[in-house]
Image (cartoon, rainbow, N blue to C red; front, side, top):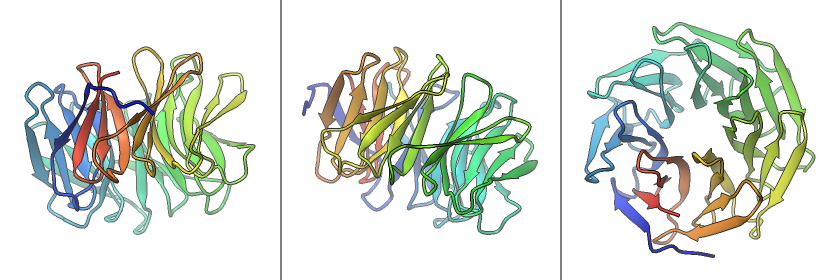
Length: 297
């Protein structure tokens, strides 16, 4: 493994608060969820100063967040079964979902100006407009546990089906297609879209990274540590695939040509989850143990 000198851990909360997801906001700052504390944070990458915003419900479980089309951050509230919105000023709005126990998890900005999200326990894909109008679409496989979701280069939404061991695709009109994975128990979680039309995803159960091309070809990239539990995935500006290894305290980089590099994270049991490329070009990682990590390859 490689531990670069340019890797920095920035504490932003206590170990029990749980930074989980991270995204670049419309203001150029890094925004992150504190899943166990019912809060959303903002980090200025220029000076490393963090501001924490209370969501009014410490048990709401803010999970994945994304920059929306309206200059705000949108996030799922897994335990409160809501979708949340926070403006750069810190103003928070909550939107209830039609199903009381839907378990929203992944969320992405759609190609149609709305936000699309997964409902893990309701077994649906949801769509919410910036004014709060919600539409849901049932999935054809029961108890599939839809997890992460992304907008593909083809104008459709792509998502992982963790329990069904498949990828899913839904058009903006609601047409759903399923693509089973070849490896039993791969249990895909994170997913990211490549501008070339392919999608990259993590196989948390198989200890591998997967890729599906625009023409439907699947490639699996097994990791040296098959028990590392790869979780989230993101692409950098050069098209290289970055991912977190939740159980191994590492971040990995799979170059476009297939070269793998892994980076040990500082501390013990940091529990890396979400990651993104920041405005400074570095990779920023949410560590559930209470910090954000900055990795400059």
